[in-house]
Image (cartoon, rainbow, N blue to C red):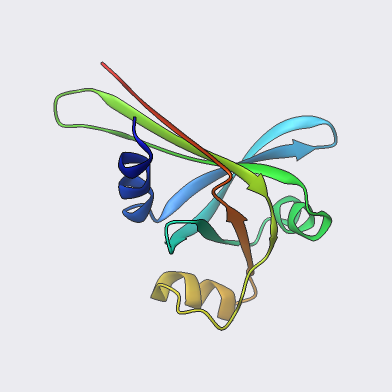
Length: 119
């Protein structure tokens, strides 16, 4: 899948899995996402492990997937170094509401961006 295809799918996504290490074991935790300027994702999460990963500058991955009308599936994953997000940026209303209710705003650059389709 091309980078442009991956960006298009990320732009339409609202929910993703954040994949990270928790006590040396893999974990996948939910987060709301928003693509910004085709070069990074903003994430909103209440999950302590995700927030801690951003504070430490850990490498995390974010994955979305879906099912097409013809039964084929697709998956997009990006990886990068997590950090705190810019609270002054314009957010989707669902993300702004979550931040206003105590969720953390994080960001991840699209350092690695891969996608695939399967039938």
